[in-house]
Length: 208
Image (cartoon, rainbow, N blue to C red; front, top):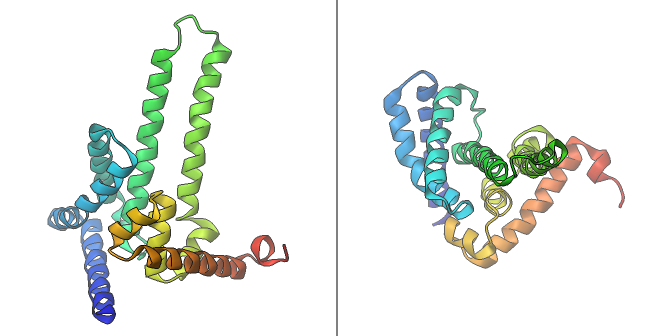
């Protein structure tokens, strides 16, 4: 069972990689197939993080527009993780814009400039913090280390860290028992820490 599942997942990853190469070459049919393969679960994940159906719809559309424009930049990593990174960033952008508009609408017309700037800055700081977390999981040493850990551990980290899902939600999403989620999460952190220590020994590899 496990071997067959891994074989099926490998074939699916190869199919996604081929589709992305075709999309990068301007193949609209490949883009449509990629959308059919991934739009459903992307919509489900976005809905877990945002209750506004219109925002989710716009973010999903923006995600695939970005994929169409930047498929050539796919580095060969798992397509699902790459797509979710794009979608999560688009959601951050949408939330930032919404919060900015809401705060500006709520601020009195005659509010002092310092007060208006402070309101805007606090919203931007919050969004930027989330941006940094998302970026850290894709780029730099953390991104390199993440690519080195096992795929089944990486998907648990993405679900629990990037998506912010609970153990139960992650188990449902991945179709595995809750106990397996917990054990994989522990193994994933250990492998990620070890990979980071090899890349940059000083911050995490030294004595506590």
